[in-house]
Length: 80
Image (cartoon, rainbow, N blue to C red; front, side, top):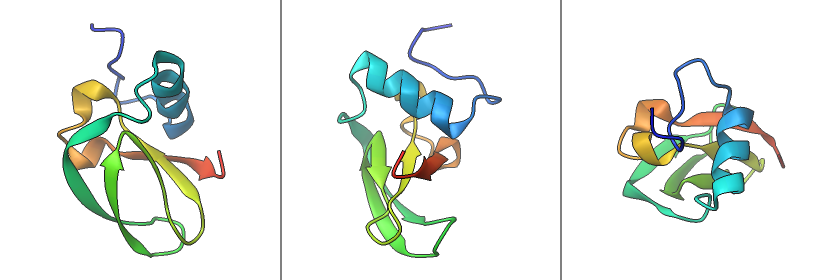
């Protein structure tokens, strides 16, 4: 498996740690996702592999291999 991929069992924190370590956290996703924050319900656009909810600051991440799949986006924690 390509080392920038995640397996389905990885937590959001593990994903965000991985993309930060590899320098992908500021890379754009294949196409921006319209998300609803799982913590506060605010809608926002995820344009980068690491994105924060603008209201509650919940951090979301996705790896490069899944950057085309909105279902692979996972929360890592508030201000993580």
